[in-house]
Image (cartoon, rainbow over all chains, first blue to last red; front, side, top):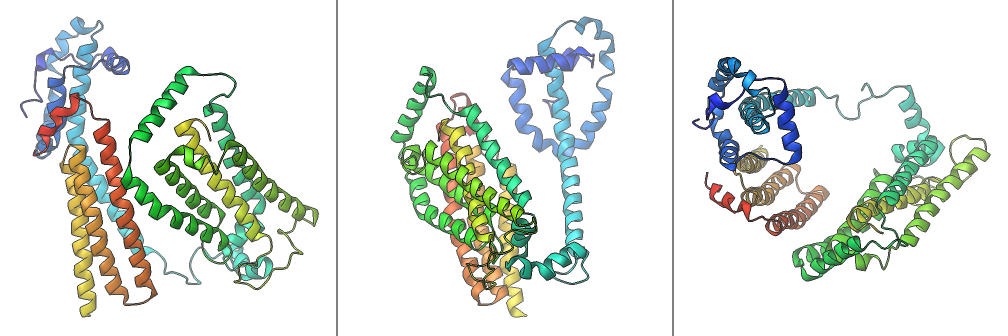
Length: 341
Length: 105
């Protein structure tokens, strides 16, 4: 409590330049003395029960300093800091109260909404309109996929999914343009940094992460493959399975270093595999356009619904999407962390 | 009925542990203290809540799935907490050393 009214008479009133000066000072990295800053921040939560008294004090403070205004119209970065900090402290006290109120409010709304949710799987639910009826009634017959979602996104709307995969591919190309270190131009500073980091990585045994990754990575990648291959039978599909595999690759690269994973995934194999996956997808879609632009692969045998080899084109498309997503995710991680794939 | 009560006791205990974790993360000011609270309570709370769910659901294929969830949480959560703490310890500045004194407050 005693900290909040330190040198009140020195603090300028709310003239127009102060917040801007404070902001400029903050951008330039000027910090006021620590003895003012730290106690404020650390003791603020304890004073929360006094928040009400503080609010009344807030309204009274700007008044007495009005006569000092001329004195402080010039540049006073330090003063601006004090002003900003006092405002922040007051805001912090009010903030706790407001945060608790908003938190309770949101929790109440969510709890109420959960009570009002329609029961699962009833025919009268509002989501069941004509479109979904069409998909649900004819989906199995048209696409051969027991998972209606996979039938929808990879058969009825396969062109849309192609666009989504392409967006990911374009994003990873853009990141490559920005982040990849040039092979022709030698960047000595960057090389030195990378060598330094590899040295740190080698010195650090990091056994806990290594053993954790050793246990987890095979299961993560296996689960991702399962999710992709079962995309047309059970919930899952290319995007989710690819994300799981990408996460597994990232964990592997994090635990064992880029050197080990670059034996499997190089820049060349990365580009070749990703482009091939997308081109396969494009080829399948082009074939469906050629055969009349009805849904995808009209004359491919559907197979028995529920078997792995069923659903016409859906399984290969799921694999293509999964490969693209997995490699894209790993590419983002690798480019941002190492500047290379 | 008695099964429901036992399950409810377990789940409420788990919720209490998680609430204590949230309170501790809010209460402590230093990273290591916060991570201590968060990591410990994560494991125990997950255990209690999942045991409650197992009792509530009865013994079936679901129990195995819940066990797998518990296993994966117990493997991943301590490793992640360890890495966060390690990052804090490695990047610690000399200037921050006075923050150790804030621990008990």
